[in-house]
Structures are given as structure tokens and as C-alpha cells.
Image (cartoon, rainbow, N blue to C red; front, top):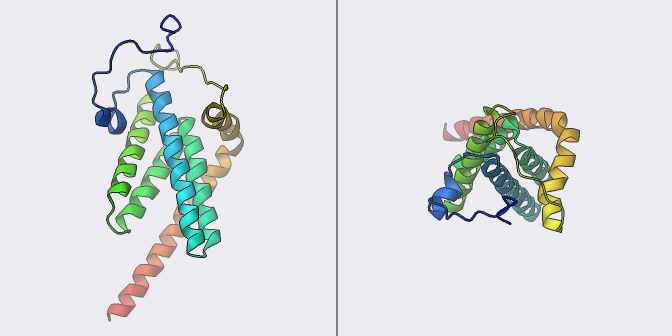
Length: 188
């Protein structure tokens, strides 16, 4: 395993919290790890959001949010700066207008670390040693779901996601403006 470079025999010098929320990004393996982490975080947010909105009997809103976060997670997994920024900005905006929650702050921090990794990796020269990514596995269902499926799906839905995310932001802005205008009228 060590000969193939698949196991890390040297202990990490970072604490668990630092490696989770603000890791050092020195190689393609670090970026790949954070991309997988971002994919799982976005997938969890997407499915928890749809469950929440189904409980509120707003299935259309739930599906729209599911598409936004899940496809954004696919983009994060494939190192799309646009997807990383879109997911982070929308989640932080939602956290600002929601009741205080430690979980929201932690998820925001995880999405920020994914945004940072995506941005750093985009600045590397493609032929450089640090930009070399580890091979994507496909032995287990989890490997296929997090490694192979996003690699297959992102090129097919990338343009759709760009348009969808922009439209989603516009709809959220319109909804926020209408809510603020309604509250302003109630205060008079």
C-alpha cells in the first residue's frame, strides 16, 4: 500500500478539527478528499431540506432545493468554482435568515473549506506535481456514488446547473424582497 502511495504512513500534524474545517491543501489528494467531503455535505443538506419541505407540505420548494444543493455537490466534487461559490453563498444566506443553529455554522464552515480547496486547486498549473489527482475508485457502491457518478454526471449537467443556479438566486432574491416589503407594510 505504501509503495503505491495509497496509504499515508506519516501521521498528520493537524488536529482533527483543523483537518476538517481548515485543512492544509498541498496536493491533489487533499483537494480530492475535500471535494468528496463537499459532495457528502451538499447531498446531506439536499436530502434533509427536501424532507423538511415535504413535512411543511411544500414539495415543489423541496425539489428545487434538492436539485440546487445536490447538483451543486456534484459540481463541488468535480472542482467547479462556480458550484462551490453558489452552494456556499446560498447556505450562508439561508443561515443568516434562519434561527441560530450550531449545525448551520458547522456546515457553513465545511462548505467554506471546500470553496477554499476548489479555489486553490484552480490556481495550480495542470502539469504540476501537486495538481495530480488520485485515481477514482469504483469497487464499492459508495465509491461509485461519490467518485464515478459525479465524474459522469457533471459534464452533462454543468451548463444546466449554471443557468439553474442563477435563476434560483433570482427567485430567492425576489422572495426575500417580497418578504421584506410585506414586513415593512406590517410595521406601519
